[in-house]
Image 1 (cartoon, rainbow, N blue to C red):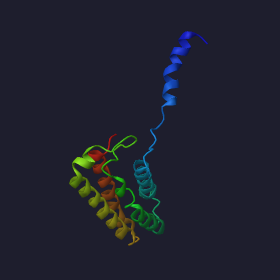
Image 2: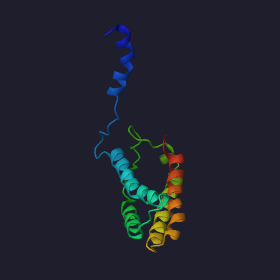
Image 3: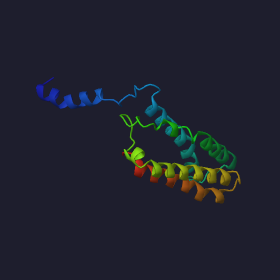
Image 4: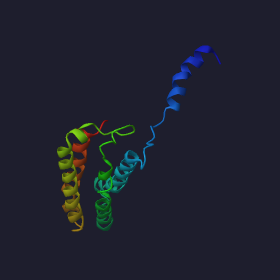
Length: 148
């Protein structure tokens, strides 16, 4: 291998060695909340796919909405004062604007309640707007409180 080939490959070797920063703190609060949000997303995204692809199944949708509501409280307790360290993607505003962050969280909780109530009606026409409301609360909170 020529010297120029080695020099071209060197950055890729270093990038491959750089992985996601691991949460090594006791109880892994950052990792725990990230996994809780991913779990919420795994309940939420299939509902959107179902609506988008026009494959609405009232019973499955209601079950996913119930699953979402059951999981929605899991991440919030892991936003302790000392949990803004890598691999966190939280902005400092989570802590410096705690009242606004809590307001966003409360909006999400209310929107998921509304989605569950609509899903339990088992009417596709009833779930579109509440689904969008949950989506919008997620987007607003990410825009204000999460690094990209």
